[in-house]
Image 1 (cartoon, rainbow, N blue to C red):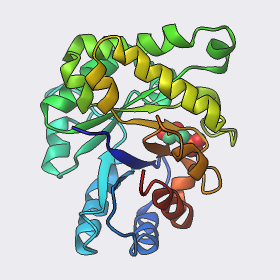
Image 2 (cartoon, rainbow, N blue to C red):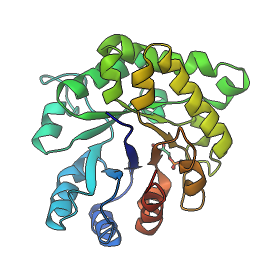
Image 3 (cartoon, helix red, strand yellow):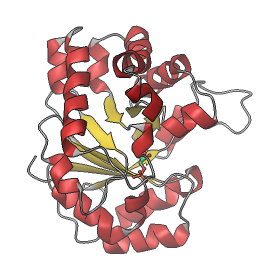
Length: 255
Ligand code: 13P
């Protein structure tokens, strides 16, 4: 397995049916390339988006992902959505452990690990989000914070299966602020994450895809993606505009 280059859109709780249409219109000329393009809308739009991607013959190029999922297989869990349901809709990717899920909905790293496990068991690809707050960075806790988010997942699924996980490093202070990590700082942290994983398995560290997320836009994506340990991005605000998102997808080509 080699490192995959991925650009994923996280629409968060934004967008509507009109955005589904305008996005696909804007991306209709996106060419097939080495980049796996993924769009993650809210649950109600998953099916519509997937069907419209197929109808537009873009299904080899654009894939659909969910923004979270239940750790349970089925049963009395009102409001939850299972991996089985995503599979039923041919949704193949799931964002897990986004910082907004951790901070607003109190998801613990152990719960996130259970979700990653459920996602892999169902044959889907998890995009595991990790990242430190500004205070954690300034107080020198980056290593312990990132390890506390990574290790429970490795303990749950085993280091060999960890290469099937896509990691998105999203420093909390860079999300939605318009202030991304500098490309040098992002590269340094991605390298550091790879070294942390290498302590447990060199091969997994070399093959795992590490995306960067946090205020990526059309103007800064090229420099971020040029960094050797950055394998693409998880894009919030800029992924709601087809023109910007297309530029970001194109910037990852040829990595
Ligand atoms: P922004 O690109 O809006 O900063 O959001 C990043 C993010 O949280 C993607 O998951």
